[in-house]
View (cartoon, rainbow, N blue to C red):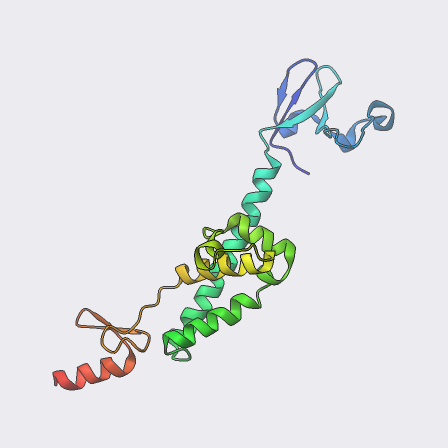
Length: 193
């Protein structure tokens, strides 16, 4: 474990990681250190007075939280990118197909099906109240809550619009300032000739 800096609670000295003796190198550690459940583990030994130094400036919960948050949003972006690729590639052509695909992918995501992951999804989602906004009423299980939040996060990350001409298919091309599906774009190009 690395420490950003440490402070001696005896002589009040502050050290960078290279300026104190790491805990693994402290001589006779077993006789110097008695820890009980919940006790803070020292970072090492003060080179001035020989007492223990403790980490400062490291908020482990905040660090862990930022890693988990990044992981959640990486999953959201990845799923959105996969769906957008399928829209661009022509595999998904209608809003109904898009909604079906989004439902299938979100419903089977580990973020939703495992309780621990579902709880974390609700911690980091921008849409943790999506269930209440969508359905309201009695509180469902963690997976249902997480599904609604994850679904909405992915949906909001998508950059997909309906065709402005037919309002049926998904727009894949811009033509004369309008977002059009492939068929409407071909029609507009043919009519323009």
